[in-house]
Structure formats: C-alpha cells, structure tokens
Amino acid sequence: MNRIDDVSRKVQPAPVRVSRTFSAPRETVFKAWSSADHIKRWFCPDGYSVPEAKVEMRVGGAFEVCMRSPEGVDHWTRGTFVEVRAPERLTIDHHVIDPCGGGPLFSALTEVSFTAAGGGTRMEVVQTYTIADAAQADRMIKGAPEGWRQTLVKLEAEVKRIEGDQVRSVVHGAFHIERTYEATAEQVYQALSDETAKSRWFARSPGLRLIERSMDFRVGGRERAKGRFESGVTTTFDAIYYDIVPLERIVYAYEMHLDERKISVSLSTLQIKPAGQGRTKLLVDEQGAFLDGYDDAGSRERGTGDLLDKLGASLKS
Image 1 (cartoon, rainbow, N blue to C red):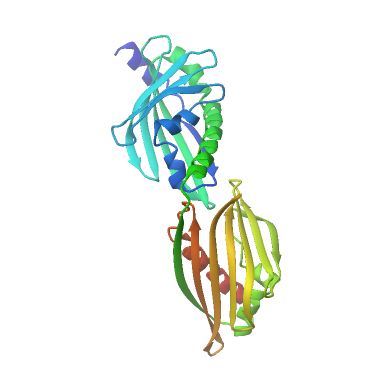
Image 2 (cartoon, rainbow, N blue to C red):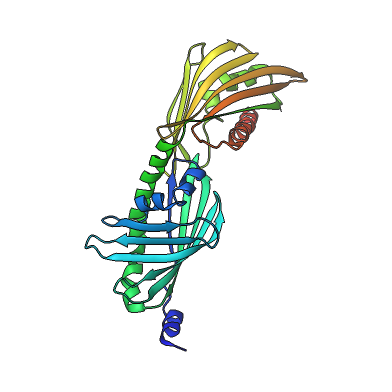
C-alpha cells in the first residue's frame, strides 16, 4: 500500500453539511449552478474571487473553478458532474489541487439537493472528503463549514440577481374544489366570515409562526395574514372582498408574497349550498395569475384543499 492510500484510509474527516433556504423557486436556485457566468459571481468565500471557471452541466461535464485568494494565490478545483436531475439534485466529484504546483490535496464529493420549503427552496449540501495529503488538506477542510456559509450568502445575492434578470411572465391556472360538511350553512358561513372562527383553521401550517393578522369582512374590506417559516422566509396573504351574499356567496381577490416578491394574484369564489340533513356543500373556484417564473405546479390547489379540510375539522371542535 502506498503512502496516499495509507493516509486516506486512516484519516477521513466527517462530511460537511450546510443548508440555506432561499425565497425563490427551485428552478432559479438550480440555475445558479448551471454556468460559468453564475459560478464566477458566488462560488468562493469572502475575500476571494473566481477569475476562471468551466461549467458543463451534464453527467460527465466539467466543473472547474479557480478561486483567487486576497494574496493573489490561485486555488483550483477540477471535477465533473456525476448526477444532474433538474431541479432536484446535483452531485459533483472534484479534486482540490495544491496551489504550489503539487498534485491533488483531497477529493470532495459534493451532493446538493433542492427541496421546496415554505414557498421557497431549501438547498442542502453534503460534502464528503477523501484525503491525499493530510498535512496540507487539514487546514482547508477545517475551514470548509465557514467557507460554505460565506459562499451561500453570495449565492443568495446571485439568486436575487437572476430573478431580477428574468423575463417577465404570467402563467394562468384555475381549479374547482368541493367539500361537504356535517354542519349548517350558518356554521360554514361563520367559519368563513368571523375572524375568531376563521383563525382556528386559516393561516395555520407546520413550521409557520403567524406575525400579522387582520380581517375586515365587508365589501371593500381587507384581510391580511403574514407568517414566518422556521427558515426565515415570510409569506403574506393580502385580500380584498368584492361581493358578499350572506349564507350564499363570497368573492374576493388576493395577492401572495414570498418576502418582498409578489408571486401571484388570484380571484376566489366561495359558494355555500345546503346539502340536506343538516349538511352543507362548499364550492370553491379560483383563477390565478402566477408571476415571473413562479412555478405553482399545483401547490395552490393542494394547499387550498388542505385548508378546506382544516375548516371541516374546526366545525367539529
């Protein structure tokens, strides 16, 4: 067994795990990894720059980055993509080269996952190392968690820049949902129109802390609910009522925001219908305009269905 094999078997540091949540769709965060132009703007810690990069986002494609230190020393990492599943997952196998002209100091298998979270994207990075030169690599690997933290702050700025550069777009969607409740029309209407009753089921989600709530139920009145997820991303529902027929119909329009970004504008119609034997049917029709690259992918319909189930549970309590 040669020296490198002996060292790599005996001294293997624990993988580094870091994560960050972005108030942007997965497609946007994933895109920030997709080209040399993007990588040059963010793939380095504070004080460093990326003067050169080669990114070919396909299995077997190159991922090569030169990080230049404040002292002007170039640190190269050279590798390839071994997994590309847009917009869900990336795996890159790369080697960190000795800046003094030697061979590889260590190799790093970097696994990146992109998960929808709180209306944004949670990106998780797991980096597993194989040591070639323990004496040289130890200091660099010990600094990896802080280096990644600083790098992901830059990535957040690049994600915001990409969103600002995106072509304006609108995607329309519509859905119809029905629920039948073991309750009277008066009880269902109260659950929709009374702030105390509505607060038992609306704007409630695991990991969401409500930070603002108001409801002025009248034609021309407004309703607002703002919450913050554990990730720090805020979500805001801002509605205005346009038509109210007591016990029969409610029509309102609302905007949804993630942090300061407006992601949709929707028109919602609720109809209350007696269903016999003390039961009531609620019909929900919604038309939405999803803005500037926001990918709804059916999540609004699923989320509305979950809310209507919570409404039904509140009627039983």
